Image (cartoon, rainbow, N blue to C red; front, side):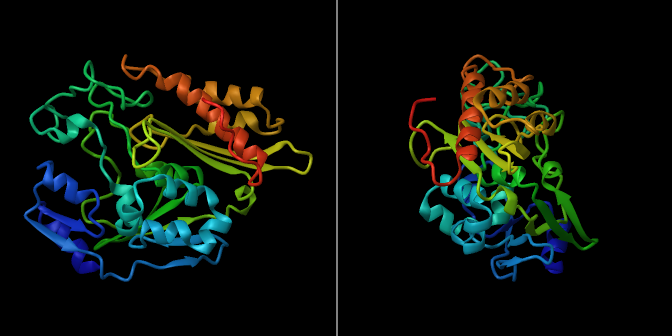
Length: 328
């Protein structure tokens, strides 16, 4: 582990590879051109195990499929299992690792097209998505330098579950709250995360979330039924008191920003309320208060509003109620 992190720091043209499901695409398109690859797949970081505090530790090299189908994840964190199974294809989930999922790059078409400028590839060159084709792009947290979105389904659920990312380097170890792991673009859109050059993800820690297990839902809206990235996704989880009112709530959005989007102040509006459509609509309005479209993606704002309400309704209904099939 120390050798791997030290090598990565010593030479900027080195890339780490495990599942390779995103890195190989980037290399094929000449978006990244590493001189060397360091294979991490033999490091002992693939375990999924309980923590003393009642949570779960997900090894960085555990495969997405193994995580989604793990009994502890399905029983105690069904929101995460649902999000993982909504992403990619079975073949990709069998290869992709948990750590790599957190680090995947945007699927912005301009980022992948090396014939056009892109501030994420070449800082300062410009963002052609602004004023260009922006149907897939962000409506929240954008900057004048970038309007790309983060593509991960898993990360939306991890944001809702208040996960913690544990990393290690030659300088030691540290824990990064999930809300602080990914960045908004600001004036440095080339930096997707707060991960240091020497740091490797060792595991992801999930806190005890038993109170949410019975009332959670992941909804993903996309152009086709499978193997497509989200236009909008919502991870919702409710903790209901004995009298039916909301005791705690989590709502995270995907497909709308450079990172999974949460707003605890909006979530807190539900505390003590009855879990009904009117209350859910107020939360949706608060979450999307600062949303701004680019023209092509203006439709995402009302779509996200309806998706938030729907996800909260499904979560409130509980696991024995089928997901409503009416159009959003």
